[in-house]
Image 1 (cartoon, rainbow, N blue to C red):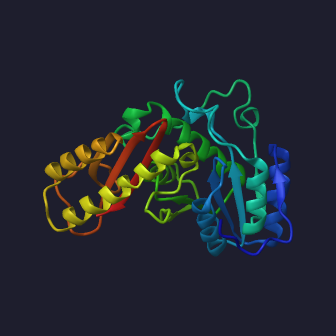
Image 2 (image 1 turned 135 degrees about the vertical axis):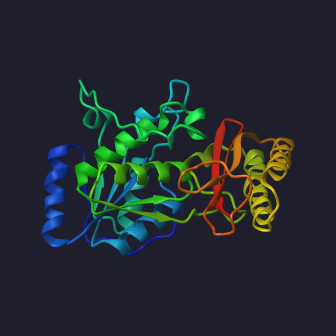
Image 3 (image 1 turned 90 degrees about the vertical axis):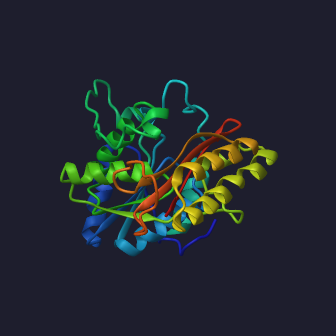
Length: 288
């Protein structure tokens, strides 16, 4: 992992009274606060978002919460990687001011009955593959924004649909917070960094490099004016031959996520993909 100069001290809050005390203390010495929401198992992709947050605000809060509301009944909630000790050490080295580590009981007390649903943007792509996923994402992000009172929140571009859903929620609910997006951080062979990559076997990890390579080739062809449908069909076949099973591979308008027949030439299109490799589900996207 890359590191930044360590903060003099990093506070840790695990319940709402402690969080509110620490946020009040931050506000006494910092004019602005940035939030980086994470589910932990931190890697250089997360640290790049923390670095962006440090540039955008005087104080940085990082939340670590594996959100049960965004996992389906058959998904990997129990298996999701957790490394609190390593994460806290990485946050201290990155200069984080406050780590917010709520439990599910703190985030969703008994009797909790309110969720947030972002219609339209939540329905296609990931919404088809993971029904209810974005309800969980929108709900926990709305709570994190309100709990911390952050001025800025930083998200990575790797989960493009998630970013679109959160931006829409913030606009629709008039949440006084600015969303910043950080570029996808990649391994030397182009694979997008993800906490779940650690579950790839050595053979699967080698095969995973086909995904970003295929995306780059398709994106280049689409930028040159090639129609999307035949390129995407050929790319899906290539991925399957390489051992990856695509859930979807599509060219969409970046903000609305509506499918496009060809790139527009103005940089607003996005090539999005989700593919399964063994037990791991890989997400990626590129601007076209």
